Length: 168
Image (cartoon, rainbow, N blue to C red; front, side):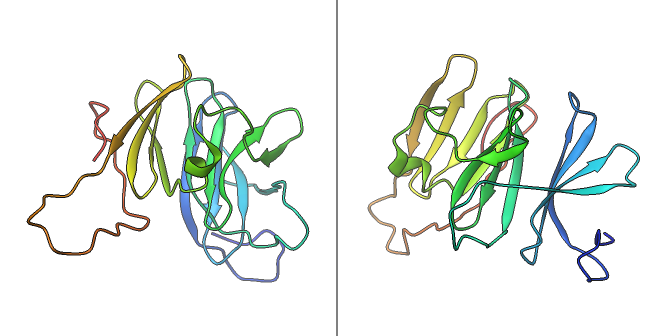
């Protein structure tokens, strides 16, 4: 996609999601180019900010999702999960939003919404299903057959949700 003024000829999109409420796309990019919104006609790509501490200049985001409350979520490769703050117009670290301990939230490597707007998450050790309307989570630990002698390190893994809402 053409770069909006950063001196490059283009940026590579790695994730995007249509936002019906705001009538725009949310876009995450490769090569540390950051987050953007894209108008419905695909003409205007606008950079989006995220809260970070001094020294956190890395802008490697991926895995955009929108939940049942129209909250926009995105993962940062190094800093974990962020949520769009509609008032501040910036992505922020969600404090006390997801009913999980910080230690688990920091390990989230994938997220994907189902057709009901609930969020499936993958932490490397567990699948987590967040019922956004009830604000509770179910955890499904990954277990290994005793006969399996291979690596138990899934790392970032992959998470897909089928049309019936099942995580794979």
